Figure 1 (cartoon, chains in turn purple, cyan):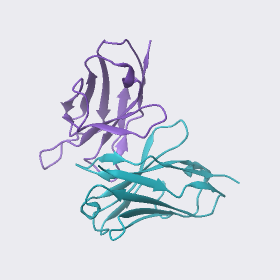
Figure 2 (tube, one colour):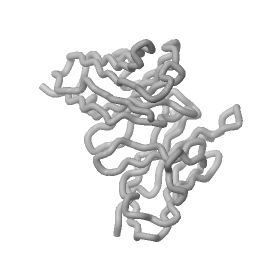
Figure 3 (cartoon, chains in turn brown, green):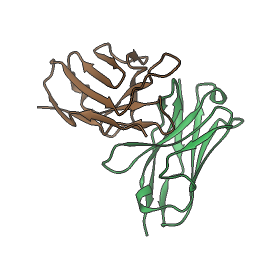
Length: 113
Length: 117
């Protein structure tokens, strides 16, 4: 199974400042069809997860453009250009290339300093 | 808009069974694969099972293989998860989710399953 490793696991942030989360996979997530099936999810306190990004860098409908995804192969990053109050929560990466099983990272808790 | 209503959770004794349901609306249910994903209290997300759009392909996490069965009724726009031989470590919130690009795109609100004597 592909292991997804996120860092940091806890990220203190400052309102209006940028933030970045790293996600590494134990093998390349590039698929033979040319796509890379790496997604990012946000889970606000007490809520269901919400997908933010799919295929590394494609934003889901309604996701603010301050969220961006990048990377390739085994190294991926989720960036928030300017953190807002509503961004507090836990962020997960997930791979859908070498499945089953689909596998998630451990999660990164984003909270204000 | 896409709506997924998970239901069927509750408190059940170890070794017993439970069936979860997920009522879907707002999209062409019969055209999409569907997932179940769970989250134990205070823990991260764990993928549980997936079923193809027509029910022809089903895959499971090793942790539930042989005990859980995913199914769907496209005439009722409903997804199911039959859970047998439940164990304490199956205690979690269970979410159904619509697949898009090999990823759970839209999620239900979740239904809580507690396995306890």
